[in-house]
Image 1: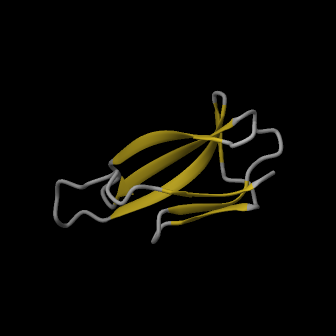
Image 2 (image 1 turned 180 degrees about the vertical axis):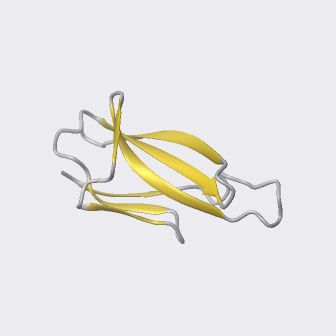
Image 3 (image 1 turned 30 degrees about the vertical axis):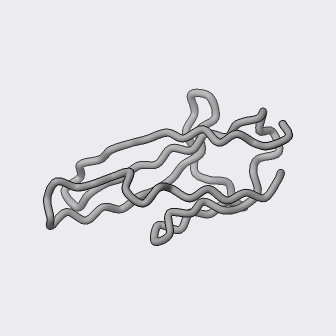
Length: 87
C-alpha cells in the first residue's frame, strides 16, 4: 500500500475536569469490524500522527477509530475516513 500520514487535530477530545488525563488510541475500521492497526502502521499519541503503509486491500478509503479514555474510565470515540488518492 501507499505510505501515508494523518494527524489528528489538536483538540478533538477535551476534558471538562482540569485533573482529567486523556489517553488516545487508534484502531482500523473495516466495515463493521474494528481491529488493531496493522504492524506497518503506528500511532504517536504525543503528536497525534498515524503513519505507515495503508492496507493493500483499501478500496479508496481507510477508516480509523480514535478512542479517548480518561483515568476514571470515561471514553469518547470518533471515526475518521481517509480518502486514498488514486483509488
